Length: 472
Image (cartoon, rainbow, N blue to C red; front, side, top):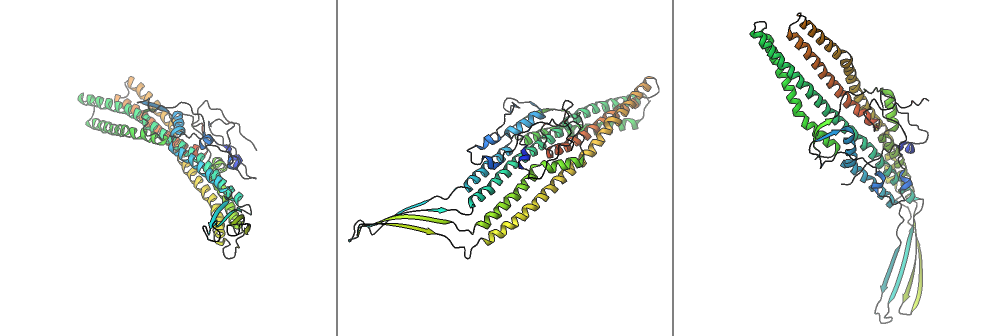
């Protein structure tokens, strides 16, 4: 398999039109480190060079998960990201598309080949057995800079293919991150539910003992048994969902044979603090899909200009030599031909090219709207889940733990029954279960936001340095 490892390719600056500026990265709670990033190379700068497509995207990747050597793989998110960069076939596919576009750009600028012909006539004729032999060569001279325009338009397709690699890179990042946090959420949910089932079993045993001692009620026993079966059902469903979640992680990485038994990760990370409007402006300023649409406008205008100069005729010049065996004469021929654009002046293609320019201009707005819609949808889910997670983490779980502690002390002092202590303990576990669910929803939504922001070092950690704010 061809290994396509796309570099960060943050050189959007080199492709941004004059007069436009890229907004500074919005500061979040613990964002990824900033620093110099490699740039996109304008296709026009290297189209003349014989550079293999793999060289354009070559990047050293550290050793990651060994699919062959590991049967029970324990995976971390950075390992999965590295493996996706190295082996995901979708990155290889878009990488080859750049080579295809570069080949077409090279072909579009090549000059027409000369034509050479040799003919023999009246061979073995009685008056001249040698016959008549003619040689003729001609060359078409392309006018009005047509080849340059064709190649410039094709080079814009190279730029778009390069931008598609960047876009696909972060789409894959998003898919891997979302699948990772979905699986980690299920793992932590299974752990908490296992604890909750144990507490529910203890509650049933204690309720039965109290009933046998005629200190409890049948209703308490039945209620605890219902709770126990409900928790068992939730635990069984979670355990059944985990293998599919691991398989989803492997599919997002692009390595179907990858076996995952456990993911090393936690939801207890510094919560990123995103603000919608700054992120929206940032995404609209740096996202490769928008830049690709802008390049599409430039390409459409070049195609229109190429169509407009098509009626300007090319000039074909030729020269030849003829030997006549009849009279043994040597004759020379010259010729010049020019097509006259009388009826076909490329009117239809010019009309279509003008429409394509209008379509390309509208494409920018459509892409911007789609990106904002994806960002707004993800931000809505992120903000809601984050607010819920913060409330559970800072208020509900501590209150539930305080209630359990007070209930335990009251039981030890003879004021409460032990069943109330178990109920308080179970409330703590249920609150933690809801906290895990909220954190999982938040990190999945934040994964989409990070992908739109082209984040590489994500999610943030407490050791991640704060970037300097770029004040205007």
